[in-house]
Image: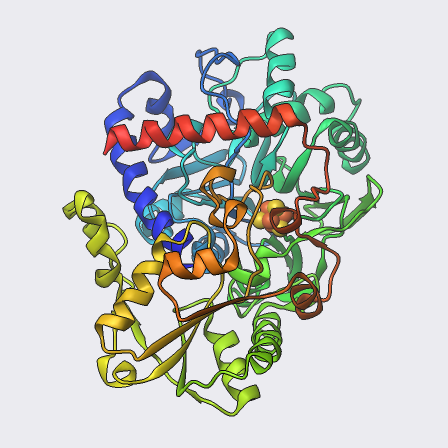
Length: 536
Ligand code: SF4
C-alpha cells in the first residue's frame, strides 16, 4: 500500500521530531526511558499526571504493532530482541522489552529495534521471562504517551504489550477515572493493563484460573481488537479478542515457549510453530512450562483481511493461511478480471514490495513478462523527511526510482495492494510516464476502501477515502491511469479463504460501532492531523 507506506515513514519522522520537542515535558520524561531496572517493590507504571477524557483521548489506540513474549529455562532477552527485529515491519516508531529475573527490568525508547537495544541493554534485561513490543508510527503516536510494554505492581507484577485498538477506550477510561484510577498515557494498552490489574485484584490468587476469570470479566467490557502478550513474575500469558482480528501465534523450542504476532518472529529465533491462539482464547504458561488455556468468550472469527493484503510479512503464516500464498491468489484473481477486459500489455510491474507476489502470479497466469520497474530506496525513511518536508511532492522519486530500460515504450500492467486517497498512486503512475511508459494499467489487489478502520489500521478518515465519493472511472482519471481494476470482494475472500473482517470495504463492522463513535473518530483524526502538521 504505497500511500500507507509513505505516510508511515513520514509520520515516523514527525513522531520523532515531536517526541524530541516534548520529551522534557512531564508526561514524556517517563516515556523517554532508556533503561529502568526496578527492584520488585518499587515497580509501578503510574506517574502523577491525571489524564481526563477532556484531554486528547482518542479511540485510535496504538494501531498496528508487533508483540512477542518468551518464557524459558534460560535468558530470554536475545530471543525477544531478535523476535522484535523480525516484527519491525509492524512498527518502526518505538520498541520496548520488559523482563523478570528476580527483579523487573524495562527498556523502551523511540526508534528501531536495532537502535533501541544495545548489547549492554540486553545484558541488563535479565531473566527467563519477558515480553516485547514494536509500535507503528501513526497520527496518534505522539499523543498516546509511553511506548510499550506497560507494567504495574498492583496487585501483583503485571506487564503487557498490545496490538489492536479499543473502540470504547474513552468510555472505559472515563469510568476508571471516576473510580479514582490515574492514567499516565493516552494508550489503550495502559487501559487494558489497568482493567486487568483491577480485575485480578478481585481474585484470591495470581494463578492461571485467576487470570482466566479476571480476563473474561474484562473481555465482557472491551469493544475492539486486542492481541495481548503479558507476564507476571511467574508466568507468561496471552489472549486474543473473540474476533481474532489481530494475529497471535504460539511456538515452542526445547525448554522455551514464545508467543508472537507472526510466525516469522518465531521461526527466525528457532521456535517451531505450534498453533494460533484462538479467537477469545487465553493461554497461561508457568515457569515449569506447564501450559493452560481456555476459551473465555465465544469465538466469532473475523480476521483482518489487511494482514494478508498488506501488513504481515510474506513469509508468515497467520491462522494457517500463508501470507505469500494469499498474495499469489490475489494476483490470480486479478488475472481473471484482466482477461475479461481483452486489453493487452507488454510487461507486468509491481509497486514494491507488497504487491510483488501478486504481480508474479498475475504475469504467470496470463503468460506475460514480469519485471521490476522500480528500485526502492530502503534507507530513506528518516533522512529525507528531515531534509525536505516541504518537498513531499518530489519525495516519491527519492523512494521509488523507475528502471527506465524496463519501462520505456512499454504498455504496463502495474500492480499495487491498495489505494486510499489516490495521491501516491498518481505520483507512481506519473513516474512511469516520465520514464517513457506508453500505457499504465493499474490493478489493485484490494477492493475499494470506503470506510475507516476502528481496529488498528491507520487508514484515513472517511472523507479522505477517494472511493467513498468517486466512481472507478473518476478515480482512474484522478490517478492518470489508462485503466483501473480493483479486486472484487469475492475474489479477496476466495484468495484468503478465512472468515474475514472486511468492514473497511463493505462497512459491516464485526463489533458495534455507533454513529457517535464514527463521528468522534473523524473529528479526532482531523485534529490529530492538524496537530502533526503544525509540528512540521
Ligand atoms: S476494517 Fe479493514 S483494516 Fe480494519 S480490521 Fe477490518 S479489514 Fe482490517
